[in-house]
Image 1 (cartoon, rainbow, N blue to C red):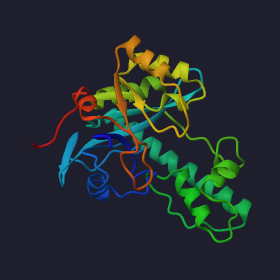
Image 2: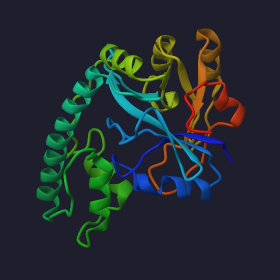
Image 3: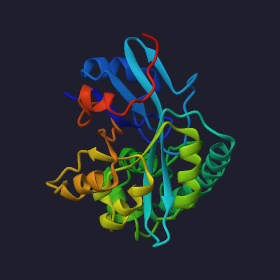
Length: 261
């Protein structure tokens, strides 16, 4: 079981685990350090790290940015103390999330002739809509089917959201975080160009549960070529932690802030 899971989502974005429940679940799953990396949201933490019930909670964030080539990638920031620039970016993103969420819900309801039981507020995303579709007794789609046929990219109810440029997002995270990492590089349409951008970052996510056999060689070569650190996490959206992550030694090499002894 990993010592540190550095990629975890809660109900403050599109996860199903409440922030207050993270320490208990971490202890159950044998994880000592959890980075809470909700999409485009900061946490109600007093500082970059807190200790709760024997578990270290690292204040993190996952921020989607756009590249010059048109690809969108996700950046993970750790040890977060948000700057005014990052807060301005996040405020605009959350406004757009609500507008986009409403547009997708309207399309789904019109297309299926149903009314979804969803509340569109800060942190709202497509997983909320997919869960509502699956839960509706008159909908014929499960969670994955909702993405595959209704709200996934190129599907009839998909609406793209606005994201900051790589340069602006990276700059704001660098100002606000102790460490910035490229998330799940082998998930992108063009992993090579995503890994090339890692040259401007501090780290890249090496440990990640892709759900399929992958060749991590390109990531390892990028780490060596650009002298990067390696991060890792489960990208948890459910109530299970530690599916992937870092050993204690690998985590300590990141030299991230620690909480009270």
